[in-house]
Amino acid sequence: MNAAEKRKRVMTRSIRLGHCVCDPRQPCPCDLFKAKDICSCAGEREGMDVTAPAAKMTDFVRSAGCASKIGQKDLHKVLNMLPKIEDPRLLVGTSTADDAGVFKLTDAVTLVQTVDVFTPGIDDPYRFGRIAACNSLSDVYAMGGKPLTALSVIGFPIYSLPHEVMAEILRGGMDVLTEAGAVMLGGHSINDEELKFGLAVTGVIDSDKIMTNAKAQPGDALVLTKPLGTGIISLAHKIGKAPEATMEAVTDSMATLNRTAAELMVSAGAHACTDVTGFGLLGHLGQMVAESGVTAEIFCEKLPMFDGVLEYATEGTYSGANERNAEYVEERLVFVDEVPEAMRAVLFDAQTSGGLLVAIPQEAAQAYVDQLHEAEVPAATIIGCITGASEGKIRLKMNDGHRSSTRRC
Image (cartoon, rainbow, N blue to C red; front, side, top):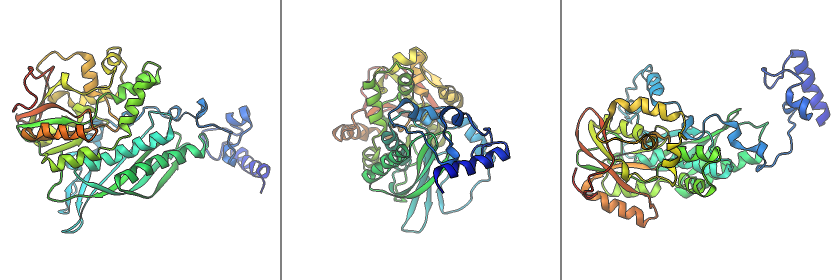
């Protein structure tokens, strides 16, 4: 059947039904057909260039990156409606809202598994694929695990964007998996108006060295391994405020694995870890202090941030995810000092492929940071400490009183 016959057959059926057979919300002929003489249901596509404005991936998303995720408050409400999983093989499940699940397969093999999918915040398909893969693998690294295999999950507007865009997204993800020593086994795709991509990752972990968000201890230092502000910078760039150089630095950070930080934290004897992504620094730290039963103290002036973040935040350039993140964790917060609104925006900013937040014995913290700097993880910083037992609180100070960062809490 040639193209003309295929079009006639599809459109005849659509007109008889009274709507487009591909999208029942549209009449037939649809607006695209009227404007450009293209029938997407018949497999026809407009000639498109990946770099052309009409092919921008961010045109096909509502909220970018991890800001597209459901907020903690709504998510926990749903999870509380579900039955508890009682299985002795399940070592870490949904009950502690940790980064990944841990399942003891045999006495010799313990699996760590996660899935993470989100929308693009940039228009380069290859680099978006890298960022999404790094973000997905980060959950395994936060548990102290080693990723082995992955399945891709992609929602893609196949009639609106070229096939090459989808291929480049997948290639970016595959290249990151190769860097991590893991393999993509296959995946699943759906024709979706909103573009999204991520990985379901399986890894292995030493059952005696599982890193959770529930074991932070009084006296631990808190180390953050990547700068904050990916959400703010991405939004500022999208509306023409942030320069290309700043966005380039953010993109490089998001497209970098947390592998080194994870491997060094395990060997350094860290007690707890979480990765900082869609719920923001305070959202993820809030879960850590709640599960660990401790109080954390954060020195805001020590936070590593991308250039310009505070300036953009001062202008109100941050997403609606900030309000959702703040609402969930606000009951745990104690403001020791007056923290400016812009700094608060950074603390709640939804991060995409952010760094690890590591609770590590105070005496090992500075050596860990030094090792990270030597291993080209330059933003790694001691940002606070665990001060004592509690029902889970976060004390926010502007600085640590100019005392040594290696002091005991």
